[in-house]
Amino acid sequence: MVSTPLKTTKSEEIFSAAQKIMPGGVSSPVRAFKSVGGQPIVFDRVKGAYVWDVDGNQYIDYVGTWGPAICGHAHPEVIAALHEALEKGTSFGAPCALENVLAEMVIDAVPSIEMVRFVNSGTEACMSVLRLMRAFTGREKIIKFEGCYHGHADMFLVKAGSGVATLGLPDSPGVPKNVTVNTLNAPYNDLEAVKKLFSENPGQIAGIILEAVVGNSGFIPPDAGFLEGLRMLTEENGALLVFDEVMTGFRIAYGGAQEKFGVTPDLTTLGKIIGGGLPVGAYGGRQDIMAMVAPAGPMYQAGTLSGNPLAMTAGIKTLELLQKPGTYEYLDQITKKLSNGLLEIAKETGHAACGGQISAMFGFFFTEGPVHNYDHAKKSDLAKFGRFHRGMLERGIYLAPSQFEAGFTSFVHTEEDIDQTLAAAREVLSGL
Image 1 (cartoon, rainbow, N blue to C red):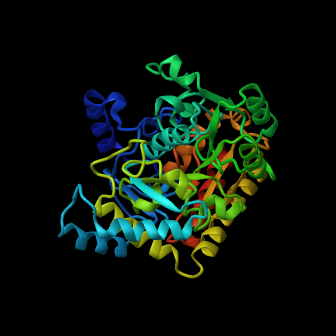
Image 2: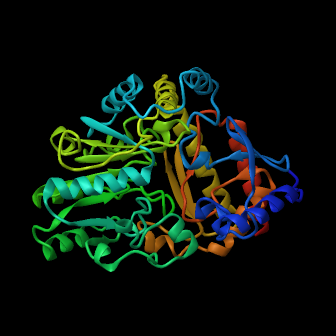
Image 3: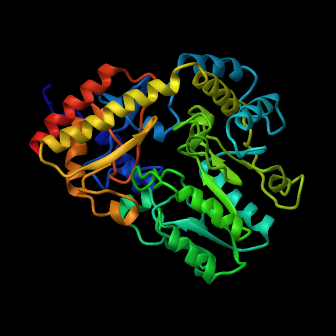
């Protein structure tokens, strides 16, 4: 495999123009490549496991539009369903039968969900579930974990992961102190810290929200007993347990992290995959809690585009595709080959690295590790990751432009794609 200089003329022209009309030239911060250096690649089209930029370069994609493309980009069955739905209109702002279909599929799949409300993004789902936690318990404080990202709502922008971690930003300006005073933080995988917060705030904590598998400060799985311990602590203290499964839902298992680990929360947020590439989110849980949501109950939340017929159509078809026999076994097989291969090559070429995978989600850090929380992740060699990212890009491999983001595979990635990726990694790591 030979590295050739990328043609980036058109990408540079477009990004240069974008910087004059959009903050930082992007619509979401991590896209700006700030933590890896250089300018972002501007996409032109996507198909299957591949993306093409405006200069005609082709890449094997391990971002998958940050998770939704588990069936591959522009899957023909999803596209065909969308074409049919388009003929009926793009937005109703009224009930449609497709909402029932997707709702029933989500309820059947996710152990904690007895009722579900559709929204338009993962951020909106987490904002809504936060209000619901407080409404149901009559309490104001919540516990979240350092490096876990639950969208950009004020209450969550305290020691948050994802783009906040990538850009090294402090707690965001514009967030009132009287809002974040009710957000309590603990290190991920630290049950004793959570116990301490409950003891210091008796009868005041509405619940705990967490990424059951962290994907927003890099890939960090829960330690044995951690999720079970949180379940026990919330029950003992009359608080709710919320799994943010925007990333993990339908990705690490059909029923998400709660199916994978056998721990059932009270509420769950979803996104990404249930939209099949279109903007969508959802939150759901026990019927008695969800009965608080308007118009059934007094907790108000609304959205004109919620339950959009196109998003429902794409979600339904995506979940149908995921139900085919052998899908998750194949996802685990190829992702394990990729993850193990990257770690073996790093070791053979003399680099400190650690990481892992669960089903179609993976990650690695340039640090000896192990990484159990965000503080551990921050010990990674970020400069080395930037050079690695660029080297892989030049060899046609598109990775998330941040050490603090998980990677994603799809069931249309082939063994040859993985082999090509590992060959590229060997070349790059040998030269770092």
